[in-house]
Structures are given as structure tokens and as C-alpha cells.
View 1 (cartoon, rainbow, N blue to C red):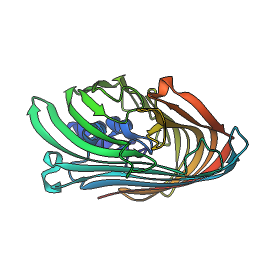
View 2 (view 1 turned 60 degrees about the horizontal axis):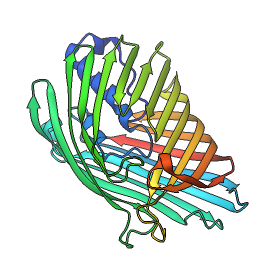
View 3 (view 1 turned 45 degrees about the horizontal axis):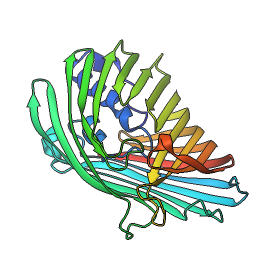
Length: 337
């Protein structure tokens, strides 16, 4: 399970050191890709481990936004569709198997505002495989390509992806991850590979932290019913989750999600400029664990902020239009085997 369900570890897991290591490694690094837009095609394709016997992890989301108005007074209707996943090509080999990762985001926009495109797409695919085992560290690489824009046939908006990463246990309480990640559509510094260095420390069964670049995270399980998690990937993604377990494999949760995405618009007169879409929302939802690796969520969200901006990178972009606050409803299906 990719977003929330891997935080709970029973006493049996903690009594088995090997299982504790494997389970915690999966739980802690999974936060790197917690948002719907967080692809399975960047460095997280390797940094987020899979269970040894897992063959695939898939996630699908549909969002429908109630109508709102833009800053110019034009109406805006919007729907969003997302899918991401990764598949082991030789699942019997476990962690030694090559992997394929994919992600697809489609924003269906309908507005008379000339500053808002009709639709936006970000799709990518990547191949990854381990290349060495150095002591306790597994070294892997990935390479891929994607498109982010409004016209895949216009010759612009295509980008490359590549990463080299290593992860391993230092001792029973500390895990290190490091490497380099190149993302040609990153909302900041898209032209250069950026370093990755993360340190996860397990303070207790209930509390662990991850700090470093480019991610900060806290996971706290105060008791068997409650789960709390905070994730921050500056400057583009933030998630805060509070979950309460109900009887019958059902969870009730509140969640904050914020994210920014970049798209190349075919008719933009400024070369190398992109249109950025940023959204912040508060959610209430219920999740049903249908089976071990299968979950269905229904979410109602108060969308506090949606804005479009233009520029080369997000931190220097100029806001072109904002939309009024609105309500959105989402269905999320997660499946693994």
C-alpha cells in the first residue's frame, strides 16, 4: 500500500529482526511518493522498496471538482485523472528484478478564461534495475522519458529522466539513502541532476523520522487506533495525514495535500517557459481494505487554493490567474499482487 496503510506493525514483526528491517524500510521510504502526482518514474522507483514477493503496485485516482470562477470572472469546470505504478519484470527474483514504472496525470479543464488551457497531461515511463550490492547498500539505476504539456505532437514538452541511487541499513535503527536524480520536468532546477541524501532514524516502534534532501517526514503511531504522518518535499509537495482505524478493515482519515506541476504550452511565446498548476486542499475520507494489497478510498475535499503561473521555474513564476474555492470528490483505488 503506497499512501497510508504501511505504518502499523504488530508485536510479531518487532520480534523478528529481519522482518522488522524489511517492513520498516518499506514503510519509511514510501513517503517519497505519497501524492497522486508523485511519479513511479523518478528516483522513488528505486528508493521505495517493494516486498520481496510483490509483483506490482498500482494506484488510480479520479477527481471531480464543483464549478468555480477564475479571477477574471470566467467559469471553470475541472476533472482530474491519475494513474501510477511499478511492475517487476521477473518477480521471482524479488529485489534483483528489473522494474517498469509509469505515471499519468490528465487535467480536463473547461473555461472561457484565455489563461487556462483546455487540458494538460503529464505522462512518463521508466526502466530500473539493480547494478551492484556494496556491503549493506543496494545500488540501482533508472532511465526514462515523459511528456508534460497540452500537445504531445507539437514537439515541445518532452523530457528525460535518470537516477542512480543506493539504500541500506547502517544498524537496526538507521537507514541511509543517497544518489543523484535528473528530472527534465522538475519544477525547480530541471536542467541539472540533484543529489539525494536521506537519513531515517527509528526512535521507537511508534515514532520515526526522515530528514535530508529533498525530503522531510515524520511517522507517529501513538496507539493501535491512530496513525499520524507528515511529509514535505519542498517546494512542490506536502502531505499531512491523521487516520483512525474503525472496525471491519475501515479507516477514517483527514488529510492535507498540496502540490505543484509544470507543463509546456505549445503556443507560449517565451521559449523554455512553462505553465505551473498549484493546488492546496483539505480532505475527509474513508478507506476500505478489501484485501491485503487492495484498498478503495472515497474522499471529499475543500479546495482552498488553485492557481496557474508562468515562468522557467516555479519559485520565479508569475501568477496568471487564480480560481475560487470549491469542493472536490475523489475515488482512489490501490492494488498490488
